[in-house]
Image (tube, rainbow, N blue to C red; front, side, top):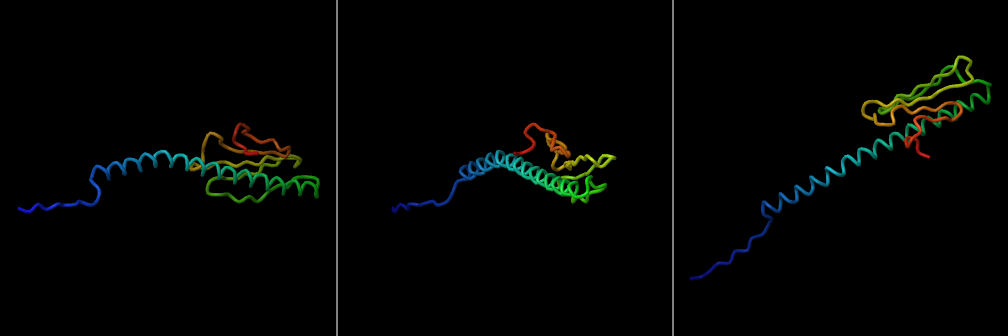
Length: 126
């Protein structure tokens, strides 16, 4: 009688299930962290846009002695920007209001003609 030796190649179902479980655990950890990094990046972009707008407003103030009555701002998919001048046009407030996809604990970012930024705690990068 001859004995035949069978060599099996491949993975068992248990091994494949372990790999799928490990990938699932890694994804459950990585995806929320990645989403938070995206929010931080978008918040930084909004801050940069606000500060660039402040520079343009300050240039206007240097030339004309007052801030403009209106300022054209370009909204993004994640923030709505608003410009509010005082009645005497000697002060202003710029705001970046997050849309629902970008809302987080920081909420609305604002800056005025004195450079005062709100909210202050860990929301504005230096």
